[in-house]
Length: 621
Image (cartoon, rainbow, N blue to C red):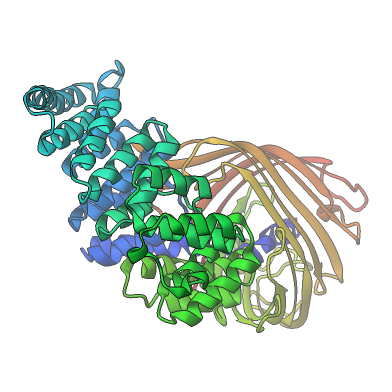
């Protein structure tokens, strides 16, 4: 019986052929190793890639934040704690870390607000710490604000007084007062465009999008480079509308660059009469030259960005290629070409552009392109090797069964196929140590094979291989060498909060395999594993234990109508791992109550109970 059960469990493990571990586990392994060796820059880079691969994993973001602190990158650490708060608003320890880092990096208003929220929570263990921090921030702010407001009563046109009132009011959360005085400060000194950016930022925070857009658009087209860049970061990810240009001009009527761009936009839209009127409003000496009707290189890029944001990907690709021809060393254009092609499903071309963009001298562009390049590399790499191992104990079979595979794949150009060379290891403890067990269906063999597999499509994978099985637990009762042909289809889908997501919630998963096995009397088997349940949030007190409780429903059938291959079973189960473990490790335990669907030839009872425990491990290089 144990050997027949082993065949069923073998089929259950075949899904691993199509569901190999993603590169996340490898990234984390290398990141923690670099951290242990105090190679902090390398650890930061690896943790950042892991965050890109699993953006909702709180534990990875925290590790990245603390590593940033070790390198002195306080702002980067602050930003990671901000994301942790977004993902898990109840994590008050992260909120406290975030507030202190905000205060340390000049974002006093945010620090004050977060401390205030924590101190008002009567059940918070950090309430006293937050109260002390809040008072240390708020008291000097209130006193300073009162002094500067009194100074303005004596001297209303004092630029420095308006600026200080605006800054202190913003830090105290008095946004209307801050907006009023940032605007007054800029009116007194229009060349200080940073005041205009601050005014736009405050109006944005107040929920006044039109005022914010006017200020930020005017600042982004102004002569001060730093202010213009800061404003561009706050603008929406789209090209401004005509009415927004006009509102910005009303706020900043002396902004010639703003007026010129409105002229170009109106001409590009075919609204030539309006363009002529706007051109007439520009002083004669400052009007653009005769080439104003032509589209500049910067305008081509702007058109590309507008098309991309609007979803017109073919137009965006055309304009980005034009911009690249105008300036072959514009690495941001290369990066956007990669993203555009990626969204269009042309990953091979996208992979090439990301590869070029990651050589950018701009660190942010190079980092973003490098992450995209790494994410595409497994699917685009010519060679890749996958290793998986799945030992499982079954009380019904009173045995430990072990399955594993080492597979090296070769990508076939643009075809959605890969050829591979594979070594499978299949066995059970009794078969390896005992010669008294039945051998008719026992494997205990290494299968050397070559095959072909499709890329995953909508969760489906199709595969076929041919090889030779070599039994390592062999007696004269059977052949040591035998041909082995096998193939079939695999399907996997998971919904909800899956194990390793770092979040609690319901989940539903299905693993389905149809497999042909020539060495077992040319049989074909269908094996369906289904589970639904609830995933718990990581338990910090238990070292970040992640658990997933499920109810299982499994079905197996075969075309030869063998009793052992036709069963239905159901029962509870749990899968678990620890956050700091390499991601490929997953432990499982199930208690299943089952029934044989065919009685003919069945020497056992109709029903059975099986206690089943297994360990899954896999990685790809």
